[in-house]
Length: 177
Image (tube, rainbow, N blue to C red; front, side, top):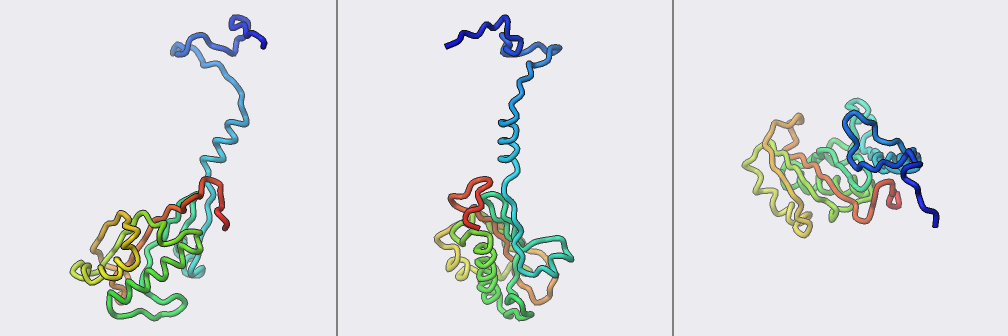
């Protein structure tokens, strides 16, 4: 094994903390930088449910970024129709069907949900949603928040957005997609 002579090798610094007015020795390691760069830019894919509408708003139904799936606020309209149930319980049920489809398209499932945000037009209807929430998320038990706010569509009583972490998927891994 060769012995390194520190005094002859100018790239090795004996002082672990270089002085403020001294530059740190430069060691080129292109592989490490390329590897870090690849890790810092994880796999990203857009999930679309209505390309025409999404092109107008510059948005997506969901975005897959590495191991994460971010699902936009979803309402209770039946996909590819203008049908929406009048009751909040029915809208909530349809929303979870729509979310399930978006997650599936993003390579995730309902059990991968880690965060939920509920937006209700009328906060007094919150308890009416509970049986549907228990049905879909009772075993998942994600973190959540509830917001009361005006919604743009008069028929929509609730919107739900979720964040899911795809299990077993790492940065750059497309997870079978």
